[in-house]
Length: 114
Length: 114
DNA sequence: ATTTAATACCTAAGACTTGGAGGTATATAG
DNA sequence: CTATATACCTCCAAGTCTTAGGTATTAAAT
Image (cartoon, rainbow over all chains, first blue to last red; front, side):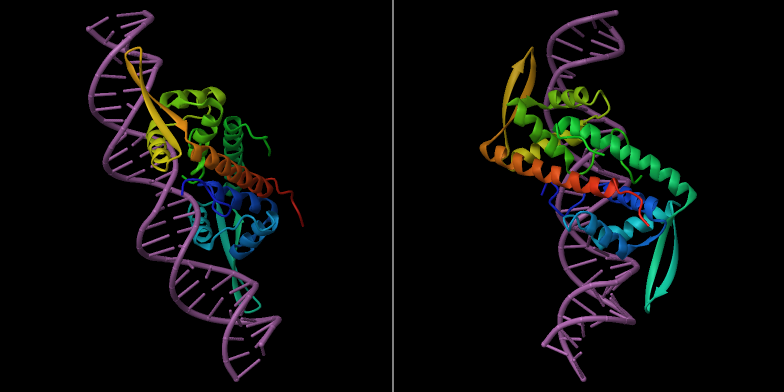
């Protein structure tokens, strides 16, 4: 299909969402991110694990995130947090996405938000 | 890179933009679309031809657009317009994108908690 | 007791979109 | 006579995502 359906993402938006969530939360683990997005969007948006984990690993490889593994209730959790570079980059990428979204709205003539 | 830069598009948004422009304009040709988007966004958003023409051809193949070629000032223009199916599909895809954008904003606008 | 659901991580294959680079051709302005 | 604007096109590489699969533990339900 051509257009994104309810659950699919727009290319490039996932990593920015991750960065945005981590700006507010200090540290989060993968599964927590999927649940948080589901909660925030009343179940309308789903982050698939096949997209999430590679995205997290890439952000880590780029030096924007660091990890710290903890065992909680017998299960391993891999916590991600923003590095110093990550904080700077997050701001930039969020601004870029916001700018793109504004331009997209100009074309679509939807009501601008953000 | 991970994040979209100023000029790049997000996957899935181009075809919806095309459909949206054609909802208002009855018929447009490719080059006109690139200029219209540039105008609407004050030059901030550029539709590359390498993305546009394949997208137009695909929408045509899906039966959402029909074409009509005219020679204007010695140059060939290929006008695209929405088919009946195209009108219906356009409404649906625009609504889907709008819905996605709202959810995206819910995640990105997140206020700090805890 | 045993199965299912929820939690929690991961990868691989394939589809799909996009950007960039390249190509063709005409009209107009300098 | 050369550059710019107009107007179309295709191919390749890069990148992201979905789908589908895998492993493993805990808690709840049967």
